[in-house]
Picture 1 (cartoon, rainbow, N blue to C red):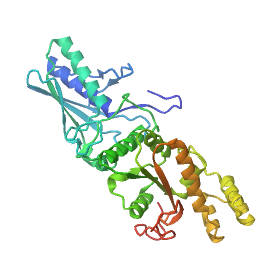
Picture 2 (picture 1 turned 90 degrees about the horizontal axis):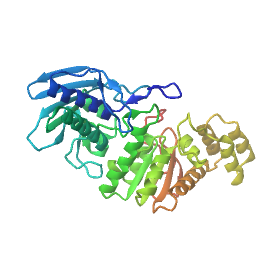
Picture 3 (picture 1 turned 90 degrees about the vertical axis):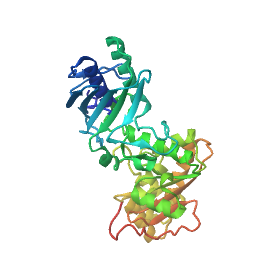
Length: 379
């Protein structure tokens, strides 16, 4: 598929697993693998998938599909997704098993029970429907075990949220539509939501949405937060705030670099550089509104970056970082729309030094760099 912007759409791991399951079950019933194999997605589209692996042995059939994520920078692009379909005891229906490279749920709060393979509800429904359709066509009872595996999935999972969410041993089989929209970052946003769910299920009363690893360390250190209270927000401040509006946690810390949080202070909820820009005139206006030096305001208007503006303000002894934090907090509270969530904001520079807070956090050492960041290194 191709998007209007000429970027290719791709297929989710759930769609690939459904295609592999369909091919394997049909081979188990007929002795032949359909190649390509066509499936029906939740919205009715019927894509065809080429098979990369076929194996038929007695009461077992295995098929594999190479995931094509289109033009999306998906960690699972190119991974081999396999389904092994086995005959099961009469009356058992369709059951699922995590094969190599597919994770197992170990924490509550996810849409699957603890101990279940990390095959999400929509992919399960797609595979179950495919089995039911073939069982009806060929007069089979449809009692099968479906084992999904992903080649190198355990290694790939280390680059996802799964370890923090308590999904251990591999990847999740995901997707609600079967289609990957390039650069929609749907998987990241879904991981943010699942992170909130896991924190709530663990009884956490304080979570932190952080733009990167350095701000995450700073927030964890200042507030003594455990790993499952840390949300890898990235650029998606809006995703965190809108989900907490419906699923509140009593306290939220937002932590990030001066550039991204100056955008949040300016009302932007997507902090990606391609979708929002630092508003230097607005930062200069903050200086004027708080009776800062005219020379500083003029210098900020000519600045190259938000960090440049911050450095100028520090030379003048002006608390621009605190004002950015206050603006970001106002934006966040506005998006929360009265949800019972207390918000504080921590602004850092590239060295992990706290350069702004609102409100001030007792015990937080503003101006102390993050000891995990070597001198001269940002992030």
